[in-house]
Length: 90
Ligand SMILES: [Zn+2]
Image (cartoon, rainbow, N blue to C red):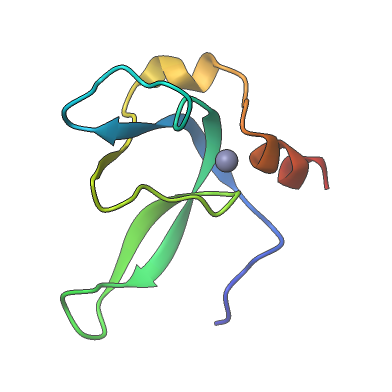
């Protein structure tokens, strides 16, 4: 199966969390993104598919980030990421 790029099944809304040291976000990472689940090959185990969460805008947490917020309340927040919104419009 090829990668599906056009149809996104948004599973939840989440903010990208910054570095562990500063819990309070400033400019970057304060957007609410739309996340979907994608299957990718594990970086550690060969031929192992794992499910990861990605934002539909393609932004992903950096190496120093702790990842996506895990807050149910975020689902009630509107998407604020301009790129995610653009993709959702289509
Ligand atoms: Zn986004």
